[in-house]
Length: 144
Image: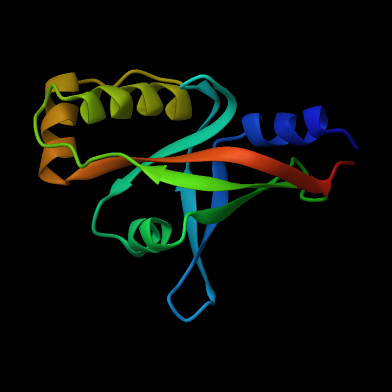
């Protein structure tokens, strides 16, 4: 089982379960839709859109250690990507840098175009959306 195979599981889907650490030390789990690939000079980065007010954001800002688990086709293979989280500034203007990155994440995670980008931009600002980034530091799992 190579890191390349494990990374292939991560990039082969857009759905996974994110684990952050709550104040009491227990994991907080969230199912997410994400994009994975090179970003910002790093080869392995996982990015997704979320609201600034959610627990996963607060947890990651307090303790950036996070893990993402993805399951391969058939359910017998899995990969866990561990890394450090970064959270962008909340979107405040329809044409700010956060909204531009959210558009990129939307295109990559959904493999599609939005039918109305002006509506999308307005929704990102109204929701105070952020980009949650995980710079992958370690991969492990089972590849069958």
